[in-house]
Image 1 (cartoon, rainbow, N blue to C red):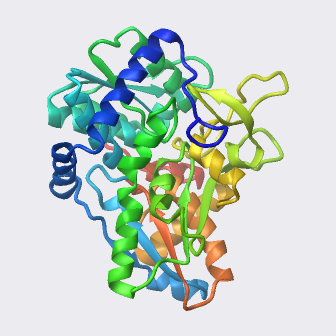
Image 2: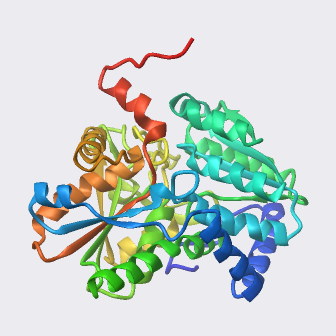
Length: 393
């Protein structure tokens, strides 16, 4: 196991062979100077990195606690942190001689980023997305198709992110020779959680460098939303060994954790195996995977990345659930207060930050990883608030 008792490679033998191929390629190229140089060049010229660190002075003044900074991953190309990991994995796939990228997506941002990379590298692309999430994120579906990807509507189970992963894995198992499965979060069999962390760790690397340059200090706290956990592990990576920096994760509390309409894996999950990894999972009494719910298509996942399970077990990160109502209020709050519309996933982190900031001193610094922009969510939030937007006929 890579993270204490969590992690592993719990997949059938025929898929394990492909996973081992990915592992061997990653181990070969992760320290390769030419590979890293090309990836860093893509980060700079294509992904628009480094992303900015913005001091949210209006929010800071309004809340009356810590100085709040926003790590503007929403300004990346494609509008979210997803492009960081996708460029790394797609470049690896290209080095491996693969011709096609296959991926799952919930909120659609990973699908859009994968389709973007496929277009850039001249590869075929197939995105699996739950039918429920397709309805929530129609604009992102069209963006994927516009970029040349085939979008597969997943019609079984709850028709959300878990089923999208199941569907992508099933399809990959039949196309192993020329296809690369580009996992969107820090989940799945080894080496995917480590690989995704590696490519996303540019977030915390930049936070650290930017704050040292501007303030000559590290942050006192970093907050990120957690579904599978890629943006969070990226925002935490360079601070994990420094206990002076408190780390917080915000997960999808849905309609509340006392019923079943939530995706609060870190709060209510138990140890179990899902999608090739041993981690924390939401399970029914009979041991089956629980149905999950969140207003956020990117957070409605019944598992979590194995490193997050490990970090909870070691009490290194504080994980809290945020309800739909709290997330929508935070979505509207940041929009009004700073003129920045966050993704509904990110709004969970903003909501938690609104609570934590008030408990901190005014000379302390809190960084929110603003993992994505909210263009894709505006219509859904309007509907949540009972407003109907006019459409072009």
